[in-house]
Image (cartoon, rainbow, N blue to C red):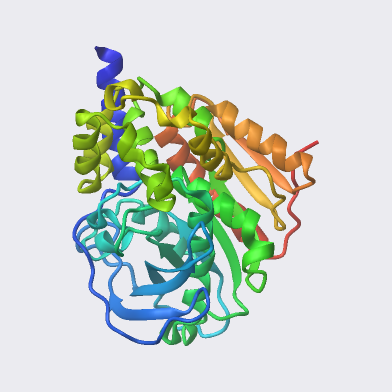
Amino acid sequence: MHRRSTALTALAALSLSLGLTGAGAASAGQTAAGSPGDLVTSAPTSFHPLPGQPTNTRAWHITYRSTTAKGTPNTVSGTVIVPKDGKQGPRPLITYAVGTVGLGDSCAPSAGFPKGTTMEANLIQQLTSRGWAVAVTDYEGLGTPGDHTYTVGRAEGQAVLDAARAAQRLPEAAAAGVTKDSPVGIMGYSQGGQASSWAAELHRSYAPELQVKGTATGGVPGDLTKVADANNGNVGAGLILMAAVGQNAAFPELHLEKYLNDKGRKYVDFMRNNCVAIDTVAGAFKKISDFTVRNPLYEADWQQRLRASNLGTRKPDAPVYLYHGTVDELIPYAVGKQLRADWCGKGANVRWTSIPLGEHIVGAIVGATPAANWLSDRFAGKPANGNCG
């Protein structure tokens, strides 16, 4: 019982550290959609790490053109945040991928920034305080029509790269130094680790014009099947069902509904309308068999789609700072080590950092400042000394 109580407390903290958010944000029309990264709408908003907390920044809620996992055009929402410091020349731009927030539109990072309820904003504020601009994607299906394609790596990575493009095409941000000449850093943890890692792997082929200097990525679920196996019946079991919903959103031919029992259908409806704190607590310590008539994750079509989101199959073309807690209870440490081995094996420049006794939340908090410091060195043009050898 003590172990379960501790785990549930950790889940509550995870929801605060990695993005529990509030109500939606409005947007106003600006330009028509065209190529990936083009703005569709923009409107002023505000950025608050806590309710009413000032940050000396300007912010805009945007919707922008991106691309689905199947290669078709879509529209994604997000937020662009720029320090109000008078700087006009090119400034560094971080395209930031948040950790798991949930499946409901009210969970989107952009929905919580004006209210000060997107708690990963505390980590983002550490970036704006350095004078960096930050673009934060909501990912496909959060804040826009349709289900969130949670854990679908290609869709996430493309949304992250296109958020940077959109920030550079926002006239108000460009006037404050966010331009095509801005050095770009990619950053994220947990789901954001998956998204940022995918962005690192896709940069060369999808958005080569972005001047990416490095990617700082942590707690990365690099192999979804191994992560699901580790969480089945454990504290993160609810995340498995959320991931199934996300995969089905991207690939409706998987027909998740035919695998669900009555309890599973009720849980899916519940998760679609709630955020991560409630969803994960509701699903904690459940088993896949509690929700299904047959486990879809080991069907051939599901396995193919899950493998398609695995990382380590492409070499990032810019240096990577990769970090992971040694006792991460949600994303096994071995999964992070395997990603390091795969990238190193392909000749990538990887700086690997273990966080001793770091659980999932500890990894997010302890790893954030060293990751930002590493990106600062990349922006300064210092050599990235990997430790693959």
